[in-house]
Structure formats: C-alpha cells, structure tokens
Length: 394
Ligand SMILES: *Cc1c(COP(=O)(O)O)cnc(C)c1O
Image 1 (cartoon, helix red, strand yellow):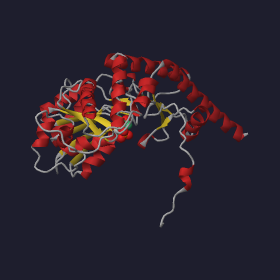
Image 2 (image 1 turned 90 degrees about the vertical axis):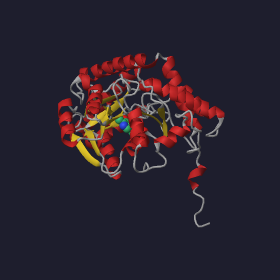
Image 3 (image 1 turned 60 degrees about the horizontal axis):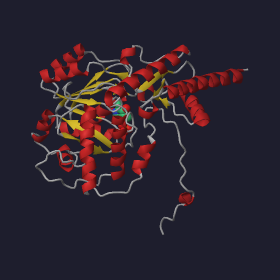
C-alpha cells in the first residue's frame, strides 16, 4: 500500500454530551435523535417523497408563506445563503447588502464571486440600519436585490421593522432576501405579509434539528426573475428550479433525481417540526423565547454584566451577546465552563471575537432553569478567572 491503514480507528468513537448553549447548534430533543436513527431510504422512494411533502407544509407554516417554491437545500445555512444569491444574481446586477456583522460580510463575499455589482451599507457592529439611510442608498444605487439579516447572530442584534424594507423593495422594484437563520421560530416573521422574496433558515438553531438541511422559500417575483435569466444559474447544486422539481414544487412537472438527499436529516427535521407544533407552534415559541431571554438578561445585569446590545428592543431572543469585562480572556472563560460543566459559552465571531460572549437559549434549551444555570456558570467563570489573576499578581 502507498498509504497504510491509519491507527486512529482502532479507538472506538466516543462522544460526550454537552450543553449546547453557544450560537448553534443547539441540543437535539431526544425524539430527534431517535428519528435520525431510523432506517435509510432512497431519495426517490415513495416514503421519502411523502416526508418531503410534509416538510414543505411545515416550512410554509414556519415561514408564514404560501409560496409554492419552498423546499430545503441540502447543506447548512451557508448553502441556503449561497442558493438565494446564486439564483437571483446575474453578472453586474446591483445588490445592496446591509452589513453590521459577519453575515452581511459573507453575503458580500458570495455576491462578489458571482460578479454582482456589490454595494455594502456598513453599520457599526450591533447597530441597526434605518429606513431613511437605506432609502438613500436605494435612490443612489437602484439595487435589483437587497439583502438583510433578520438576526445578526455575530452580535445578538435583531433588525426590527423588516416589513418597512419589504415595502421599500416593492417601491423600487427590487427583490428582498432575508437571512432568518437565527430568528425563525423565536420571534415573529411573516414572509408573505412582510413582502420578503427569499427567506432561508437553518435547522440547528431554534428548531433543534440536525444541520445540513436548510429551509428556503422563493416568492413568485423571485421565481419570475430566475426564469427570465439570460444565463444559467451558476451552480447546479443550488439551482432553485431543479431543486423545486425534485421537491415537487411544480405539480405538473415530473420529480427528477437531482441529488441523493440524506433521509436521516429529513427524519430529524420532520420530528423537529412535529415537536414544535405539539408545543403550541409559533406563538407559543415566540412567547417562550421572549420570556426566558428577558429573565436571562435580568440575571446577568443584576450580577454586573453588561449586554452588548443596549436597546432591549434590538436584542435577538435566541442569541444573547454579553460584553466581556475588561482584561478578561474569553478563551479562559469558555474553557472553564466547558471543562467543569460541559456547558458551551460562545465567543464572538469576526469583529466581535474576544469582545463578547454569545449564549444561545434555543428551542429545547430555552427554559428558565437552563437560563439560570448558564448565567451562574458564566458569572462563576468570570470570578474564577479574575481571582486567578489576582493570585498570580501576589
Ligand atoms: C448560523 C447562522 C448562519 C449559518 O448557518 P450554518 O448552518 O453555520 O451554515 C447564517 N446566518 C445566521 C444569522 C446564523 O446565525
């Protein structure tokens, strides 16, 4: 053999259970784990197609949309982001992207690869954009596509008044893409009512489902732009029309083999949506996330910690960002919580790395006891690390 058998595999696989309270993935509900261990099915078996049909109905409910072009992209949230941009962008199309954290930056990166004419509307990290300045950019650049993140999980900020931007896009005949990866299920979102043309989400955040299968929906306007393209969509894997055919979004066309979908992920997501609905659905989940997060914030503030997003209305209910106290090394705090309690505390990411902690209380992890526990562990960890420094100075 040119390359010999690696020894690594002689040691059996061992995975420990952690409390997944970073910015995602969140813990699975035990039923989701069970569902994912069901037998494998083929990508065109009748039973698989039925599950996909169920999922489409579930996703339409979650997005509050009647769009027929609604399905899942095989791949994580990034794949759905890439799918949205790849289908809409044709060379030199002007796209306006609001950027106040890494998701705006990533969207800009992908749009550039697609040779779009990219205009970035930069805000300070954690700061909302205003309708007035956005309108000015619309006047100046006449974008064909507008991209906005509903919840910037890199900063913990939620953008309010999405519907105003939906109206603005209609006024300027522009298509509206919204990243709802961290917000779907934890706070109101109405794709049709808010005139969103493409919304996508991830499964491993509020839904507690496995990552790798990402819901996305396209409005009639988005569909029209795709079918009017002069050039082919630059990606076969993410071509929304081909995916829509596979997902039976066009009942008159035959279902085609596009790729081998992972049946275990379909089971996991189906079970996740079933649990979500059993627990009272959207309204119950919005209320729970709001209530638990407010409680979590008040415990942190009572203990002298400061939230990164100052205005309470602009705080995302699924991910809380907390300012790192002066001269504290975030890695030490994170290791302390992980080593001692197997509890995940997230670091900042991109521009917020080392400046904030990010804690996600999502879906099954969104409950008072866990909010208290994680807050206490964070507070304990900060005290322990501060004491360590005092001791080392002596
Ligand atoms: C997590 C996240 C993504 C990316 O999802 P992946 O599954 O990691 O690719 C995109 N946008 C937001 C707002 C997120 O929180």
